[in-house]
Length: 251
Ligand code: MN
Image (tube, rainbow, N blue to C red):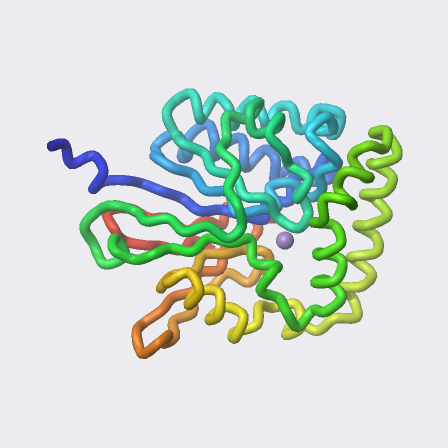
């Protein structure tokens, strides 16, 4: 028996919000993929890798061809890369995944990670996190609409320039709406968190979306439970690392 699985190194990241308007984040991410990510056995990207995504044919036109190539090279070098869609890049599809060498994940999904150490035997529930913001009634309504097959099909049938315009308009509306919402409304709802964890028999939840990196410890069914919130990549590389069964959140 080799002890390789026990040494598994994993990183969870989210909310990079890559966009041609913020080239520094793209540089930071490419640097990460070329160096630190190569030492990982698994990299989990939990949504909003891109600030917006108008369909898989829009990747290169939006200037993300280099990111796709960098992801694929890291995957080819041996790191398994898992990609979950976020509320901004929910239109990511199989063609992107193929080009980028990623495996698409449903939201939510359970993973178990091997190894000795305190976190090794936990059941990890991974989610982008926006579905848990149930106090934001407006977001939940638009989420339901846009995740419907009907909306997606109609949107993806439009020519690329029209999808780009529509995405820009949606971003403007979302920024405007956020100005009128409190931080509490835009955060996750604790009852929604606990319901989802109970439903999946999970004791550890890892999510992003809120850009409020933190470790929350609470009690669920009388047992300890943890919620790890990932931060964004506007200025730094926020990540949750798992190594030898130990979790470390780098804000
Ligand atoms: Mn998000």
